Image (cartoon, rainbow, N blue to C red):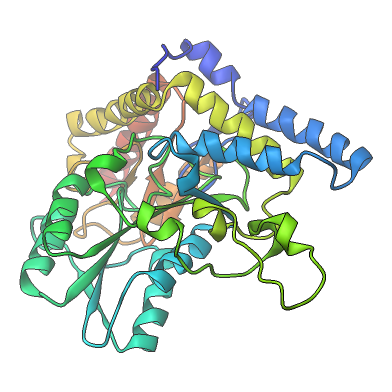
Length: 396
């Protein structure tokens, strides 16, 4: 993949459709719309209204599949199109071997999509969940490694790359080496990183990877991507048996006794309904934009924005408000426990009145910019928070 120079600040800003009065910092919840994605949706809507289901839908699915594969190992046979991360993770949970007495490792407070499927599978098999918890070091990687050392029964690791609520990073290469050394399966939910952080599949060698399309991949809601390792592509068990994931020549033969043949590779995991023309067109436009910019270049530019924000806060004495450990392309703000618990809500109210869009969860304010936001805007936001803190400290 060739990394291209990013457009200048004005061009990057104009690539997105965001009202001028908003400071939109919620990409970790829903990506700001690209102009090309919106235009693709309009075109597809009119095209499909005239042509119905229409010819060529399989070709559109394959174009999106081939583009999505560039974010994994480049092999389109490894990618399935599914409606959500939860769907993809349910496929993973159904396939990886898990027996009575074995264990699945997850993080404390892990996003439900990568937890609920494992709870169900453990209940079915008699396996159990092991929860990695951060200690005084506040290091997720250390927490995972400690859990692995303490429990030889762990045979599945179900993890993210960036923790969903505060953006802190896990060292996946280190974790993957330990997982493979003990013969454990590795399942990754990269919904909060794929498209913003490059991924080296060859180094990690996971069994399954999922990512939603509507966050850092800048596409539509209702279309996600499931990558399956080679060993699962020809013998894995789908979650559903829809006609779109099967060879059409055998499928439409008369007689119920005729066995349908799954499409090759991870296509066997495709969900019915993924051929929606508008979502496919939006996904194609979004993936094309990211690939044109270069995921590595996007990652560097996003890191500049977060560094401008966190650096300004630290320079003005608010480093303790930031999550400990390395953060990725988004981060959360949480006043220390010594402060009034109402401060987070009060600060959130102030920022919302000033048309800042973000997520408030569990007393944390999560800020997730994309390239439509400049480093100067992130610095200005940090200074607004510094001003808020100084005002409330003087009142106290």
